[in-house]
Image 1 (cartoon, rainbow over the protein chains, first blue to last red):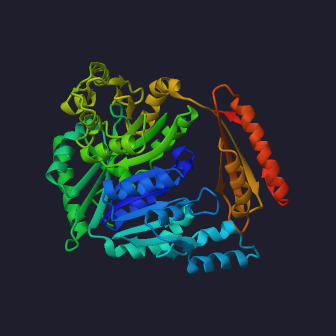
Image 2: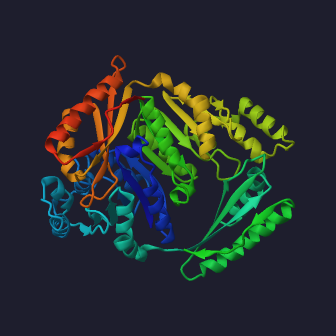
Image 3: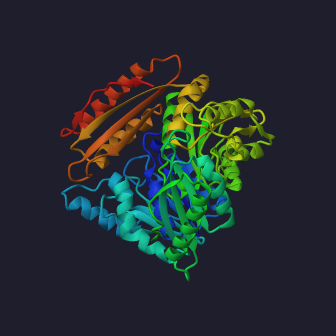
Length: 270
Length: 270
């Protein structure tokens, strides 16, 4: 299953907000064994949101699209309506969403206004995902063999809906077992390690290796070495990961006598 | 001028890194009066990097593309070669880049290796942007009426090249004067403020307004109100911004007697 994460909001394009939502969602999708193939961020514009859906589906063959942002009460929160337009659905009041929103406001003695009721409008066939943190519900739409999940842009609300509804729903679509580990490599520049790492990664297509420079390439090199192994469901991902990690460490040690390695090949199932 | 920011690297798609580079670049482009219309993140794959360029140019009509990531010494650092392939340029050793890289390694008594020399290869007509922080130079390519700037993914290196070369180069392309301010609105929910804000934004297309919820919508609402005004070069952006801000505050005060406003309409030229 291929996923694209779409982030909606001019505040992202203007750099006033760092897009941590895309990282959270991507990480959690990877834990489920769902490949994230692209992130796209666009403004609060029907045309650009529609473009983003088109790109996700036609360019990146996404089976799953997760959007964040644009579900709130203000005029520029248009994600839900954009979803209805793009997927050719009637944009209607969702009874579950409306009940939840009404209860939240009424229990606090607050009136329902058009701006507040707007958050209950969704594509006709969509399911409302109740928001345990704030008001605006998330949206689950299954249409044309695609799964679309729209979540609010406020990180705590997005994560709240993710934990409450999205993860348990998506678990059935994960196709891989993944394990990961990371070690700290001290004393040898990334560009020296590169040769061995390159060869190992080429020889082992199911192993993903990445170095993250933490020190200075020539003065005091420190690199975090991240190793991820992906296995089919019938294999034990931790055993494969430990084996691959030890194999790689052995190669690095043999070729770099000055290399100091902090940490062990302790792999975590994901 | 329209810009698209492309972030390259599987670590972004896997959520192991939060994409703060896109926010930094977008913010700085906005300061220059250059519109960022989309962000795209893809993996270290020739096919996907090429797709991202295609989308930026054909879907979002970008005049300027800024990429980050994939300029280092490892096998998966393919941005420069992807640039050469996409724009149909020979991928050659850039003399300036080579000199810089050689000096950096040699001054520290280190050998040049194929992995290190690789960082000096660029599209034939590209200009090397020297890296004041790390090794890999940035790339400036002007081709088919497009400007492409490729920067390393390590934030300190990206920012170092931006400050040293990119900002001064791009200043001539900025078409707008922009000023901004923000205030804190306490005691009234975002969904109540929405009506006035929506109307004001609709009536004033050159004013961008955004609320960022900081408290809880129904229990103790606190919202940051961000106001940005965009003006042509012959107007004083600060004066326009102060005028618009005061006008809006007046409307909000009149319609919300309980509203507490922290901060003044102190606009900063950007």
